[in-house]
Amino acid sequence: MALSQTVVRAPEEMEKIGRPRKRFKVAIDNKLCKGCYFCVRYCPMGVFSKSEEFGATGYTIAKVEHPEKCTGCRICLLYCPDLAVAVEEERAEEK
Image (tube, rainbow, N blue to C red; front, side):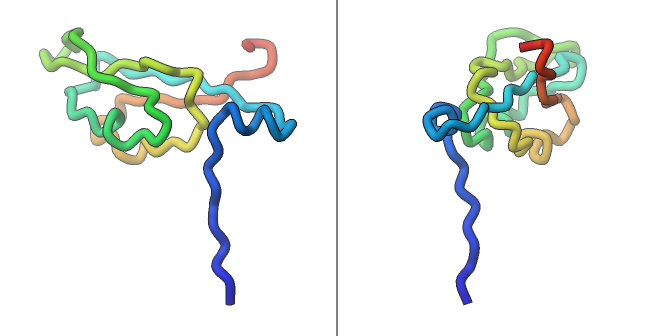
């Protein structure tokens, strides 16, 4: 019995194989983020990074550094303990 494997492809590869790439809006709520940086650590595409900005809770917070790299996997949502990350697909008219 063969196990199926999920292959995560980089956005550039998706365009090469002729498939239109979905784009996503990624945001961090400064009022909720406490700077645990789980999103920075666990994002497979490197969308997030540490910032020098302080959030409403007084902690240095994460920031969205490369939103164009987001593939919509939503792993960041699973790891964020404070529900500070939002990911949604862009509509065609917003692109």
